[in-house]
Image (cartoon, rainbow, N blue to C red):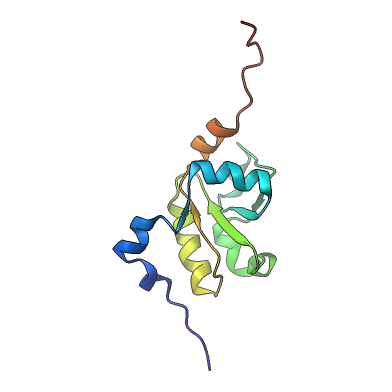
Length: 125
């Protein structure tokens, strides 16, 4: 019997209001430190040329169907992109392919860069 996954059925008001579908700013920093999640950068190659995140796996969204076997089914997958839109598409697509543990990062790459940038080099007060 073929099992059909229907991630859109999960998109009830209660589910979305609970925040269970996303990773927040605080959780993001903890997950990077713990290495318990695979952060999936679904931006284009051109976008990645401007900012590379060494803690993430880069698979552009348009190549994901042929590279899906590179993703672990036993680990939390957190897709992200420059605006959250493609990450949301990735969430739904991965859920429809049987990936149970997927949550979308609610931060844009601009917000990510702000969070992880080094402290000021010349802070000599």
